[in-house]
Length: 151
Image (tube, rainbow, N blue to C red; front, side, top):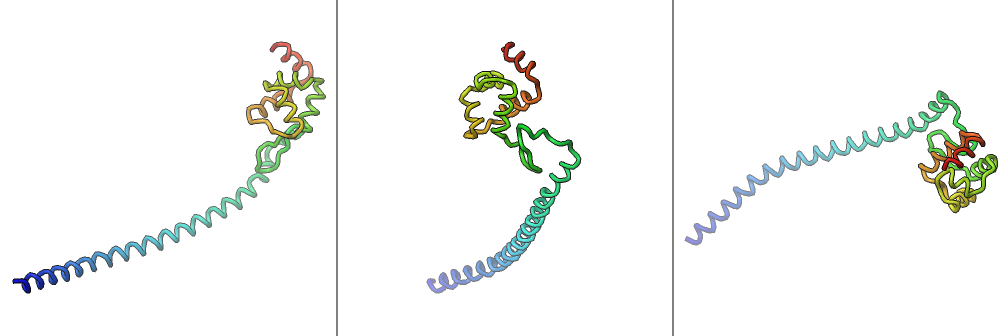
């Protein structure tokens, strides 16, 4: 009986390998197909990213031609970039208004130390303060004094 059991066991293993071979070949074919599709998609993504980069280089120059010129006395702008803060221009604005650093801080809603650091170029103001500074840039000396007295 042991020879019968051993031969039965061998036959079952052979049949199982045969079945697995067919299924594995289908899986291998699918896997290779998926790999080639993924590689093709990666190539397409790379090509699209390079097109986007090329278009982003040309788009700001087109936008700057159609848009009006930005006020560059306080903040310098370059095509395709955010507004950058100019410490010298901010200091000139404060002097034009005739304010001390403490008065300018009160007007902008910051501390006198922040004003000092902004003017010395050690720190740049955050976006919220930059908006306030730009709004102060648009007003005259009388209105600035009125705002200071109102606070």
